[in-house]
Amino acid sequence: MSTEDAYDVLFKALGHRVRRRILDLIKDGPQTTGALCAALTALDRCTVMQHLAVLEKAGLVVVERRGRERWNHLDALPIHDVQKRWIGPYAAHAIAMLEGMERLGEPDASPARADADSKV
Amino acid sequence: MSTEDAYDVLFKALGHRVRRRILDLIKDGPQTTGALCAALTALDRCTVMQHLAVLEKAGLVVVERRGRERWNHLDALPIHDVQKRWIGPYAAHAIAMLEGMERLGEPDASPARADADSKV
DNA sequence: TTGACATGTTGTCGTTTTATAACATGATTG
DNA sequence: CAATCATGTTATAAAACGACAACATGTCAA
Image (tube, rainbow over all chains, first blue to last red; front, side, top):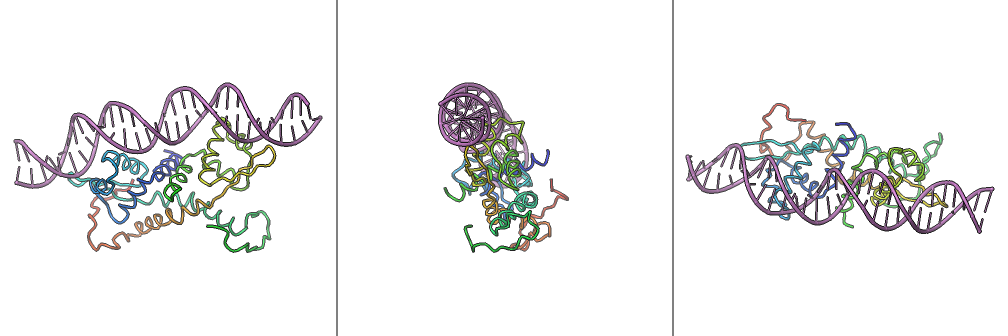
């Protein structure tokens, strides 16, 4: 799988609120599939399992089997990677825009502290 | 649009390589739709415009019309926001994992990751 | 004004995703 | 060992997505 493929899968995995919710649920410790289904009462068990499969393919969830239970662990390393290679640089770009440093081409661009806070 | 809706739209917009490519193309300055189509020769013009519409709905592209041209500007602020509220905390979580600080809250509650190396 | 150019709109079509149902496996316990 | 519980698998239908064709609009320049 190429790097771009990995980013596709990762961003798509994060692009659904149920999956982000699942990540939150296992953030402070692994949960069984049953516990996650109990927490997501609005959804069918199969649906939760499909979401877990998407998260697993994205590398965000690592599964550990203990007897007849399945413990879903969070692995945040892919998110860390995405932040370094993608989100971080663009976020820095946003800050540069906010600070009016858009014309980076100019060698002696003064700090030009623009008007305080335009928006967030 | 709720916050969760906004995250859905944003992550989904980032979840396609063509759209990430477009963001890269306008990172250092706005481009006309025609220029973007010329850079993305593999795709039909309509397809490029559809991708631009997705990016615009996500707030990542701001359009400025000049005569018969359409200049597509990058707005990285949504990415900055996502980093602050979502990516950043999870990335910190990943670093904490790397540094073996996983058992912050529970003294010995974690199910003892017995397997040698479970990482993908 | 007219013709070419840049962009916008609508509709189609196959694929993928989301949510569910029905059925199957596999472990634990009484 | 059998009943039950947690999970896995396969199939299906609706909705969303991605790519494209065909046609429409608006603008600049000769």
